[in-house]
Image 1: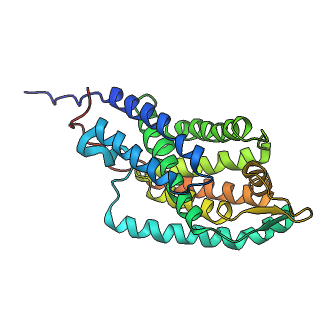
Image 2: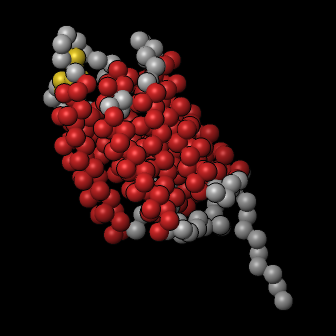
Image 3: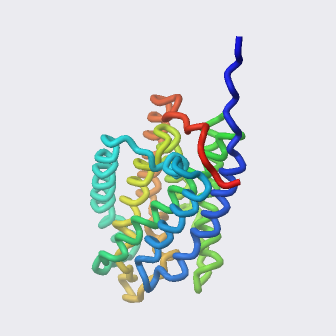
Length: 267
């Protein structure tokens, strides 16, 4: 009686693709203030790197192998998230002393691709790699949410000219949102719904320039983060989304389909 052939270990390929994307991801940030399309170039570079490492199965590893029906549901989820965020923001702006300028279409498109790039890294690649080492999806979700919040803290603390640290409440909101997006990926094993959550949220409140209502001074992005994500209402919304995501995770205990084990890759 023959024994089933053991699937090849692809941890090396996962590490290579992760390191390539980590190197590629920050570059668009250097040019995005003046060139919104920098994030689209970044997406193209990330896709090229994943194709190089994973060959024809790169969409599985990027979390982009989405059932056709769910592509439509992803678009609907993006619209609902954007609409819900838009309804909440007037209250947030009033309580935070913010005035929003006119939205910029180019920046909105850039934010969609920025969110896509972050979802490929933080959800598809990092969770895919961590699943090779740990069996607890809840543990993976929580640990990665900590990394997600810490990455934002380090980015704004050291790369912004003002070196503004994110507030504990803003970091808590980022952590809760990270858990929700992680759980969405773990439940479905593709980034469609986590991207809809991420992009639908970011596009609405990060695309227009923001001003302080008293001084009319334009605010830097970390200052906006602290006033918007630091609002208790926004933290409560992120917490509610986290609870819903855990319900989805319990509803889909096995997640999505397993990745293919046989593939051409860079060695």
